[in-house]
Image 1 (cartoon, rainbow, N blue to C red):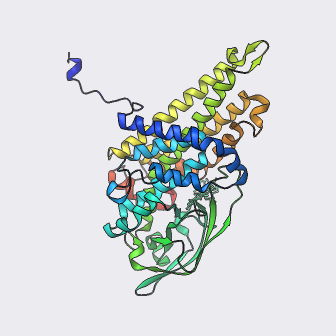
Image 2 (image 1 turned 45 degrees about the vertical axis):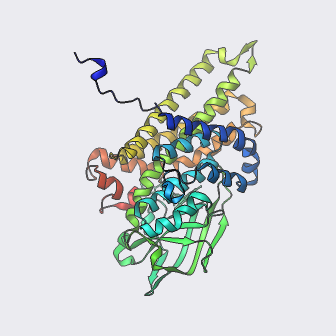
Image 3 (image 1 turned 90 degrees about the horizontal axis):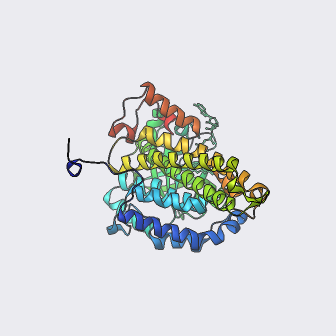
Length: 411
Ligand SMILES: Cc1cc2nc3c(=O)[nH]c(=O)nc-3n(C[C@H](O)[C@H](O)[C@H](O)COP(=O)(O)OP(=O)(O)OC[C@H]3O[C@@H](n4cnc5c(N)ncnc54)[C@H](O)[C@@H]3O)c2cc1C
């Protein structure tokens, strides 16, 4: 028998390091004290408060993985996941602002940007400039690389024309990572990633969507009308945009998993609290087995989602393959978020259906989890390909760049 102290025992997934615990507590405190009082009004107005976004920057939440040398926190991807989860418990709109900034924009720049590009833009995205990630168009959602937005090589610069749709953070953003096709004859291998600054002539943020949920998070159209972009604003190489998109979305999906996990936890917390206060038939409703069983099932689902999200995030930080885990955690967490929020509404009874309590909003907010960053069907396609072996076996390279065979089904 091996002595206990000589055995190498892996830490439980949910065990946080001291640094992670401190970080989680500070975001939790911010969410409860600063964010919560404004959530209802922001949802009704469909606008996120600028002062709160500035507080995200001040707390370091907009540059979690950005190195300190570029004004960030030099934190881990897992810390971004913790932040997204904690914010989503209170407001999934707040959490998606931080999610897009960290898991899509900063992530793409950190991995694909040149040193000069990192020095130029990361200090801004970490300190004071909201960023957006613009891939989707009216005609290309799941089939993202069928994009119609064109880039034309004009020697010293590129000229971009087209429209993007559904772009999160667009109303507030100063920096846009935008994908356009430089050579449609090459199909997705013409897709190129550009960094566009908001005040570039010919670039406009258009109509803002009026949505069912995450109403305070802006979702807008982008209009590009002969936008001149310097060549040094290409992220990665021309024609490599599809790889950047796939890689960042693979990681971004863990962020959406965390958003949905936090949302479900928030709904469960409200249901637990209410069940301990509400009396019917002379008893607290938490004393009825029917209610207890509902709460127990909700807690099981939250725990399962947490394990999946944390596992995918920790695998990503450990440099292990995580493509399947990311798709699974997003798929599952978005399912349980809907279910847990729905049950929370029921446990609160009539008041759960009103705007006086936060669960109706969480129920509305949950719906987006099954749509953005790849619909549930697209996650199922990715998972099925992996388990059936139709896709190349997962490797560090493939989960970052995906196969050349059918990239569209991964978005
Ligand atoms: C609030 C919000 C925020 C968003 N933020 C961003 C953002 O910041 N940046 C960005 O680029 N995009 C963003 N999007 C776009 C989002 O990623 C797309 O809406 C999503 O990928 C789905 O695309 P679609 O809407 O065109 O639906 P479609 O692709 O038209 O899908 C419609 C239905 O068909 C199904 N379907 C499609 N193809 C297949 C298939 N091959 N097999 C089985 N089923 C299929 C889908 O699952 C879905 O149920 C956002 C969207 C919303 C609503």
